Image 1 (cartoon, rainbow, N blue to C red):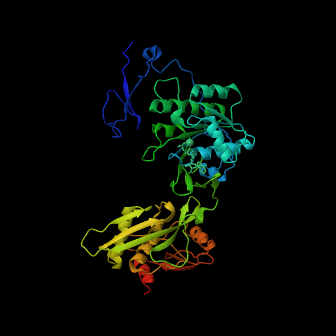
Image 2 (cartoon, rainbow, N blue to C red):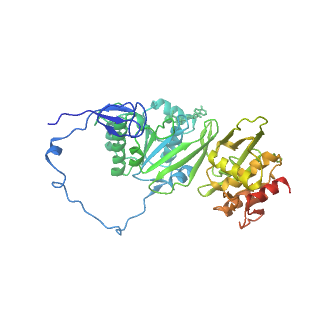
Image 3 (cartoon, rainbow, N blue to C red):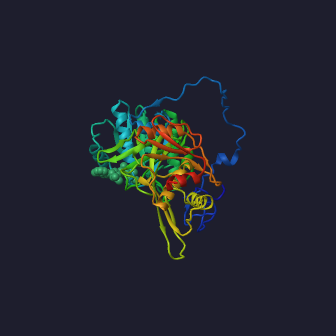
Amino acid sequence: MARAKSRYVCQSCGSVHSRWQGQCPDCAQWNTLVQEAAEVSSIFAAKHNLQGGGRVIQLVGLETPTALPDRLPSGLAEFDRAIGGGIVAGSAMLVGGDPGIGKSTLLLQVAAKLASAGRDVIYVSGEESAEQVRLRAVRLGLGSAPVRLAAATSVRDILTTMTDSEPPALLVIDSIQTMHSDLIEGAPGTVSQVRASAQELVRFAKEHGTAVVLVGHVTKDGTIAGPRVLEHMVDTVLSFEGERSHQYRILRAMKNRFGGTDEIGVFAMEGAGLAEVPNPSTLFLTHRGEAVSGTSVFPAMEGTRPVLVELQALTVRLASGATPRRAAVGWDSGRLAMILAVLEARCGLSVATAEVYLNVAGGYRLSDPAADLAVAAALVSALSEQPVASEAVVLGEIALSGEIRPVAHAGLRLKEAAKLGFTSAWVPKGTKAADGLQVAEFANLRQLVEQILGR
Ligand SMILES: Nc1ncnc2c1ncn2[C@@H]1O[C@H](COP(=O)(O)OP(=O)(O)OP(=O)(O)O)[C@@H](O)[C@H]1O
Ligand SMILES: [Mg+2]
């Protein structure tokens, strides 16, 4: 028999190497290679190749009639929205998020809702004792929900318990990094343990029609800890996001084999748990009274829902010849530089000696180029100390030539703005007006500057 070679597995990307190195050659992370038990080469594998001795599998055509997957509404509409309309039986989901963001709270609420609706739900915590989970349930007002709880970390024990009786409709594993499979060596949380435990649990889900939700830790840079393969093994990857200092939490699908990834679920973290926010359009709008210079409102889109956000700009003229600072929070700094360059080159505004700060209110992040015009409006308003009308929303994409391009979903965005009491809109030329909104059309950025300067 061949000598068992030791192998070194990168804990960050999962690549395998034959010797230890300080830096992983594949993902360039330092000190991530860990020695793991070698793959067992069985006598069978040594003696046989794979081209004979197997069973012939039956091949079927695409046109075979198949029912759409059954979706189980969880009772939390925002959760269902993010995963594409309900939990699919036999699917595996992975929920990632920063420590303390509310993953356990969210899943306990989903579990309790489903259990109260008469479904069999099992919640296994590897991080907290059953007592701690029960305390949380009581605090959330869910103490009477018939969820079956356990504190366990052995995948074998969990699966034995599952197959002992009728398999549940939903199994929550909090978290996959604490699970331990005795099929292979290694401490819980290592790449091979996480992979093996997840594989066993996902296989159980597929075989028994139980939906499995795995909680995953995230690393410092925000990716789910453990191997990337974990994300490939599950059907849906969800990320639970939010600034801890802000009340709002967003559940976003990064991957979904059963639906789109463009819808988000919005929650507010309150004393009694996560409250659903079915209408998030004013969430990120700070209190608006009289118009102040340096702010503008942009109707952003989240999936099919418009969300109004406030952009704030501040400029400070530098008397000395020092290099001015440019900083953007919630907006790409490259795009900020581009808009400043267009303002300088096409509109004759001098920004070279000004420090520029741009902030998207409420901790919201914008990446939609349709916000260009609103960013430009806030900047011009800050530079000239002339406010943008407080009852106006601004949208449009800026081209390098200074032209203003039309944006997607302009109708939906304007309708929402009108519903929230805005009375005018600054839009690209050719945009259809919405009821109750006065539109001012702009063909190029120079016209916007003139409008704000009141010329
Ligand atoms: N008594 C309380 N009243 C109000 N909010 C609370 C209370 N206890 C906890 N919270 C909120 O719940 C959050 C913790 O939620 P939860 O334990 O679900 O997070 P988690 O994502 O599972 O964290 P971890 O990664 O540690 O498992 C806290 O950050 C806090 O905002
Ligand atoms: Mg937790």
